[in-house]
Image 1: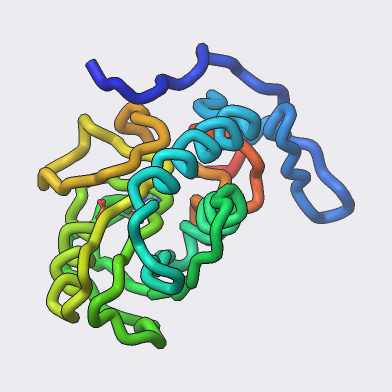
Image 2: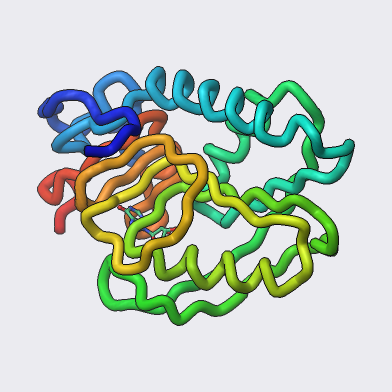
Length: 211
Ligand code: IMP
């Protein structure tokens, strides 16, 4: 059993609602897009507060400017914004965009850098901030890549992890929620670049998106 918080009970929502030609995304009922809400906005807020407290304790000995949060675009935008604001001390932030080749919704671990970091990592404590660890292939590549740049340390924080899908055992220091091996959207996670701005996280209803 995982020692991380689990997700709430199954819940089926109503049909999608529309605003003109735009599909509404609503945190309270997910506007009929989801078959299940796995993690609510409130649970995310609470859990990120707990993780921020852990990070604060763990990095208490580091000097000003030593801790760098590295966010992975685009999925980690929400978690980075909320986690960083839950920290009671100043941190620096930088972003990478990487593309992981794969078939369908699964990655292959063959990664290409689309946007690299702008800062030097030498001697810095790097905390990678991820939205989700699925197979772990992308993250494993990223950790090795950043470790090769001479940082003082590299650790990983992810909001979601799918333990059943892991093909590589990557050391993830901070995990928000362990979730089942299902495709999820919301809070930064997309399906075909949509639904990132849902405030909760859930499994997409194939009928609602016409797939
Ligand atoms: P991994 O290399 O299999 O761990 O895949 C990591 C990347 O795949 C994540 O950073 C996401 O961009 C994407 N991904 C994996 N699972 C999901 C999901 O359930 N919903 C949306 N994107 C996902």
